[in-house]
Amino acid sequence: MIATIAFAAMIVSGVIQVIYLLRRQRKIDPFSHYILLAAAVLLLTVTIDRSIRIRFVAVTNTFESLVFFSAVIALVLFVYRLRAKDRTIPYINFGATMVAIALLAVASSPIAPKDVAPPIPALQSYWLVLHVTLSFIGESFFVVAFICAIYYLTTGDEERKKNLDRLTYTTIAIGYPIFTVGALIFGAVWAQNAWGAYWSWDPKETWALITWLVYTAYLHTRFVKKFRGRVSAVLAIVGFVFTIFTFFGVNYLLAGLHSYA
Amino acid sequence: MKALYKFFKSAKLAVIIILIIAVLSIISTLIPQGRDAAFYFHTYGAFWAQVILTLDFDDFFRSILFLIPVGLFFINLSVCAVDRLVNRERRKARRRYGPDLIHVGLLLLIIGAMFSVFARIESLVYMGEGDEIQLQGRYLIRLLDYEYKEYANGRPKDWISTVEVRRNGELMIASFPIEVNKPLRIGGVRIYQTSFAREDRAQLRDKDGISRPISNGQGFELEGAVVIFRGIEGNTAVFEQWEDHSRTAIYRTGIGETIGEYTVAELGSRDVTGLKAVKDPGFIPVAIALIIVAAGLTLTFVQKRKDRDI
Image (cartoon, rainbow over all chains, first blue to last red; front, side, top):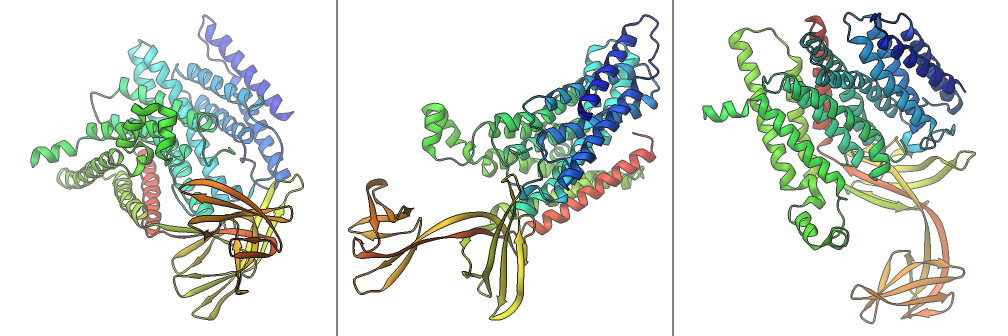
């Protein structure tokens, strides 16, 4: 129920954003980000409520992961909107809100069972909690970078391009260390503790590594004149597509150890 | 030499190698790893199976195709790490040590991982209550108790194997519960709760009256063939006879009946716990490497914030 209200709030925020974006006088809407904040708080309430019921941090299945992921995206967007200095922010906020809505749509679909169930033995580890939460926090910044990069490739305005390139870089520069520590380092520590192997080349692990390699490549394109700009933007987009594939595609298209989340 | 140094220190080369490793890894996840040759012929047809097997795509992460780009990456990273240091001294440039730490950490990680690839040993044993295993010649591990707990909805909650450890005959640990996510560490070896099974056992007696216990999966020779005990069905023991990789007969033998030179004396089953013992000399260097990388990432982040770069 609370999750449904949050989902509705997110949609309302998206509608308000699009109305303001389509209006002629180009005025930035003054309150849609507060609705995003409310949605984030509601989603985190869902996480807390489920955590109390299962007596463990509720990030142990697809539904719970998506709720947490969307909440963090909404929070990140709220903060960026508060600090907004240029005219590109409302567009980026709108694009990223659409991503969060899409994730919640998947969460509400039958793909993500909503049973409130305590975790199986392999998942009963606080390394897993750190692994999952930090991965999603890092990936939330990748969502913003993804939208910026798409906008970068589609706009002709040089001033905007410069701002968008900068914002793509800063969001990845924030998300990358959080993602690396969460997805790869804490993931390895958890795997070592649970299975006795810090790395087993399971498809989900391999795809997380591939995603990390793409963002690593992105950060290094900034040092190569030829790659800066277009190639960088393409990598920021590919990185996010791979992030999503690592989360969903591997579960449904490839088999492996991570079949539960 | 100078040209080679210049070639390997380039960030462009780094980007290209990283992307090559990424693309090769993608292909590897599309092809199931570690199956037998027949699987690839059956799934992909003769030509592609040949390509996969020739290029070792069935064991990709140990193949030349993967290890050569990783080797190049290692050289590229080493040269860059050295170059950053030298250049900074020369130019007295602003000191950002974070990326240096990340690079050094990654180099150590690759070295540690190589130790794991070539020197890691693991073995899985199934133990019933009272069973003992030897570890590294010095330790004797005895299973005191094995417990399986379920949630109300029937999902597994925990598997606990309680063991006693003796070193050179002396009691070292009186009781340690090994659980999933809570391994036991002794003498550089970690023991993990991995699986559980129901084990069927048959007590066989030969013509001289000597008994021989046998568990499912184990076998004995019979007139040039191998007979495997498959388990218990009803009140009979099921045996399969194998000759030249094909099954030639199935026998169902009750208590008191004979199979070859043996008479089945007793049948029974029990719960067994699957414990995995792992010795990985690569783990410590990898753990140190991960700490260095994490420290490097944190430092880079802090310095970038300080410089108002992000």
